[in-house]
Image 1 (cartoon, rainbow, N blue to C red):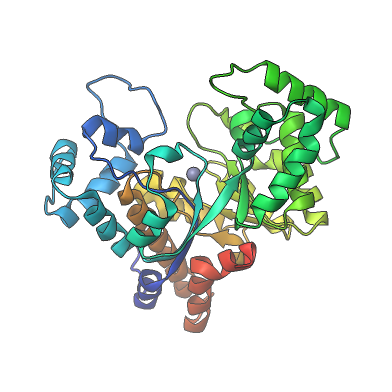
Image 2 (tube, helix red, strand yellow):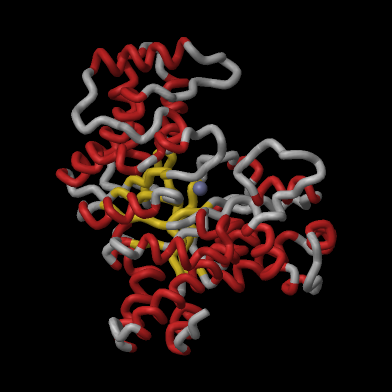
Length: 380
Ligand SMILES: [Zn+2]
């Protein structure tokens, strides 16, 4: 293994990060199974005899987090038992204390009722929280209120215009619904009304409408370009089994990226694994495309550096953002940050060793990756 240059390590350790995509934390006390559920995207267990701790994510978590609560070398059960004895707000402060994050962009659209509020999260993390609006969830709320399908377009546009003012960005989970092959030309009004009518009819009243039709989701993101002057995040790649992986390839989004580029709207591709090279290519080809490696970094553990360097083969340095994609466990805010720091340290060190970067350039790059790129992408 190569020696990491001292300055590279120092710079990466000292970065003050902007986390461009994360979720809030769950302050309830977890039992072993409840805790393990957050170490995998798979809802179903292989068998009772196996544990999600037997993975790069699990080993990484025990390695970094067990010593913090005084159980160095603990296995899964001993870790979770020791964790139960500590107040969850104290745990959160400990993990955020090590995460070194100065701003959190929080997606509040996923199973929000179980999680700490944005105010609680800001207080526990010591970092301001800015909310991101989930387009599909927001549109489902509008669908519940309209009486005729033809009313959707006007009501959605108006509601989104107002709501977007209070958010720093918008997010689409098209990858989970119809896939990323969204269109690059306007959706016809009759096609939209038909999709709205089918969505309303096809759903039980108890669950509420669930938007899955491509014309409707294309309409949501196109309307976002028209009425909201905010970047749009897209979930890309790896996720739970609701998603069909090959439909979450960001290359499928190219027609919509072109449309957004004509209107000078930024697109942020989130997570991206295993399509981080495709995301890097899109960031290279289109001025309005940014991307991150969140989720992947937490789930690949010690391989974070490899994913990072694969992404940076082609990506312009000004396009890579940090995210933890942490959800529920405060550990994931810490581990996302540690994984990213170690990947940046390796990358800077490699550039220095090959005489591609001097010290001043390393300083500049660390600052771009940590926050400048994010502040530019979101115009914060
Ligand atoms: Zn997420």
